[in-house]
Every structure is written in structure tokens, then in C-alpha cells.
Image (cartoon, rainbow, N blue to C red; front, side):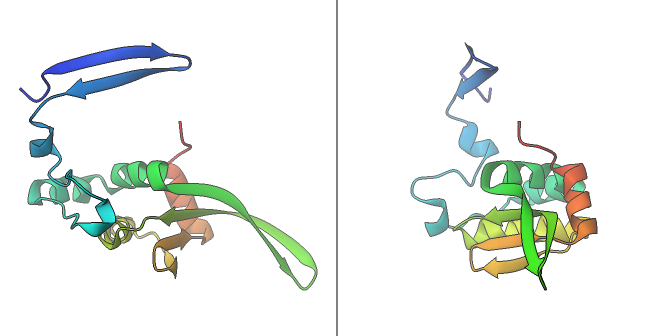
Amino acid sequence: MLAEKVQRVRQQGCVNVQSYGTHWPCLLPQHGPGKKHERPIVLADWQRTIVERHPGDFLRGLFHSDGCRFANRVTVRGKQYVYPRYMFTNESADIMGLCRWALDLLGVAWRMNRRNSLSVARRDAVAALDRHVGPKS
């Protein structure tokens, strides 16, 4: 049995679902003590298979936790342009690598804008992420 106890707590506007059990590390082997960016984050083979089949769902989780979609404003020769853009930031090089891998699986163009941050700005790439990631809930 995965969870020894599952509990639902009603809160304003949502239901908080909590689960306690000693077998969670079997399902999530990346979980461990210390900061994520100071230890390796590597998917098990069975997890990689799931991500390969459902990269959009994986990216949805990544962007909803450590990413954002916003209106980028740029002025070129006095004319202002506004276009949507996604950003993903994480201190873990491993997690950044997993994000890049999943974006590549979907054929979504991305660029590293800092060592711990990537940007998705091309119109077709943003449209693809809109289909897979959707608004934060």
C-alpha cells in the first residue's frame, strides 16, 4: 500500500489533499534530504518512459511550479511590441536539463537566458506550451 493515510481538508476555494506513508520514496526516488540543486535529480527508467509518452503533462507540472507566462514588452525604434512569453527558472542543473529535454520532445524552441533560466518566446513555441501547460490553477 502506497499511502497509510489520505486526508482531504476543505479550504476556501480548494480542497487540500494530504497523504502520509513510508512508500512515497519508492514512487518518487528523487525525494530526499537537502536542497534539490545540491543533489542529483535523475529520473528512473520507468519515469523517463512516462515523460516520453506525456511530455506536455510533465512540462505542465514544471511550469506551474517554477515557471510563468507573461506579456513581454519591447520597444524597437520607438514602437512598442507586446507578446506572450514563458520563463522557467530552477537552481538545479538536472531539473533544467529535464525541462529542456521535455521541450525538445515536443519540438518547442527554447533559449537559455541565464544559467538557471530558460525562455520560450517564438510564437509557435508559445502556442504549443499554451496547449500543453495552460493557465495556473
